[in-house]
Length: 218
Image (cartoon, rainbow, N blue to C red; front, side, top):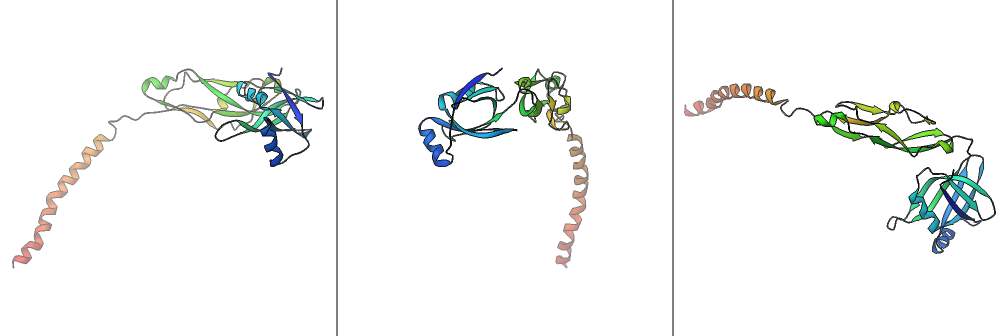
């Protein structure tokens, strides 16, 4: 079921100049494309586009065209102004409810790693994975429990339990880890032992330095 409805005005003119004129009218240039779907250039009111900030990145959207057509879409890409962060262009992908689609889904790490109790540092190495599933089965996030993660341990894509989706990202990629903290006293003993040979070498250097002085006295 779609979480959002957007109204799009189909446009025949494209290009930078036309896009600027649309933005002046508070219309955001948008393109809709997808497999077995002819690309459609359109414009969506800014107030409606701003609703994208309140839904999940992979939320299903009912797009209603000014020519009477409609289609289910998801957001594929957006461009924002570098200063105002307002939307300036949106790419929408047309989807079919009976055909799988590939999307990136965010990861959510749940719990407190046991390794943190011994001073380990938790590090996130990957924040999202690519999956393939039907549009109606796209999860908002994929949760991973990290309670049993001890110092020196890590989780990989292969540790994700697949549900109504197939994971496309390589199973070898690391997602997170607990770094093992070294003891501060390690290495102190070798440093102390290294001082002994240095001390022994110091007396031997003294006669060598005195030799040139004796020749000068003759």
